[in-house]
Length: 593
Image (cartoon, rainbow, N blue to C red):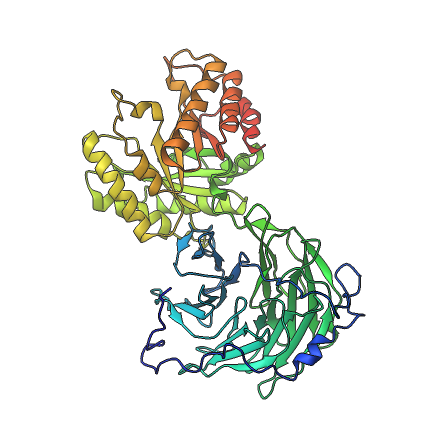
């Protein structure tokens, strides 16, 4: 973030005005919040403790808490604060998987808050290391620079929007009270105190124009709520519970509120409001979290996110106000590479039926299909776009991830770049997208080795400049890149810097007369070397039968799987689906263990 506040914040509008006073006058409503109700219903059915005369309640705000929005139908936009205090962003497009993390910079001292008031629009806010409020916006085409909005914050902000261009930001000020600032589509209004004594960051949602509902953790460790009805702010009201985090709030329709908190048991807990029945009691959403929650309503659906103790963000959804909650699933960009994989080449399209083959893959324990889309020798950017769409729709319907992979030759860089990015841009007739992009690095038909290495690095960089998709580099086995071998001088470091996963072609069957234990030792070495050379997670490929090679036998397949697991590979697969002996599938399925 810049160190000085800019002279103009919104293009074409006046400079920012009216910072929050560093020590604003304590509003009269503070007294009301300081009187904690001993009968407040706790998440654990224990009454909120009496804090009179006790030490100050510790801050329940977690800077690692995620924020979530939906800038387009079916899309999920996820924001977190990185370990280095920068804003990190990833999204999941409709019909696809999570992108790689995107660094949006800044110097954050809190978790972010985000809202979308129109298609493609995102407004992100955070407390900076200077304790001021900072904002960055995406207008559907590009990210604007960070801009300061003043104030003296003690925790992260919250934001809601009740119409296009309208932004309402709530923060906890240096006096512990709640402060509000609004953008009306033309200018930012000055800060105004809404009183209270918060011990967490606030949460805010809007169910209609002119309506705001705000929630905080109070000094009694319970949940407190107040609302703005378009004309005035109401009084603070206690809603009980014992909170171990800041709350999150979502409005799934007029008069419909969901408030989520993390309790002392580190599970997520929910309290709902309906206009006909009022506030319902607490219910548990389960899970176990090291951060507070984030929540977002997309139409009638509600999504809740939180960071688990292992650092991975998890999500749970409810599709409608009357629907049931899903279980917690990881928002894991590496999911397409985990577990058992299999391969379908363009040469297999004519012989395989996607419906039958995908059903068989699922029954065999396959989690990811690596689907060839084209080669440098293909006559078009897709060998068969219609067939690729059928494979993609069937695989996603069956719960399989699909990595589209292309074989470049680098005699025509424009061709190779276009055909690779076409994978990321493709949408099937059913609206499905490839879960990741693979670049299969194996052919020296068009250029020599030195030119190939140079253009490979450029290719990977250009792909990443044009798509946010996860990229897997399908690389030669490390032993083939040793001095004197066919791929000597391979740019391992540059490949690692420009991809998220590396997948060595550890085709042990190409070696001669390996015993099962030798298969294990050789594959284990390739996995460990690939990770050490690139610094990236490794999935590994084995297989390919043929005369004059090490035979594919059950004991050798078992040791290949052992090597993948012993080496810490996140996934493994046998090339290819069409040629895999059915007897090998139970052995290969142990990859999923």
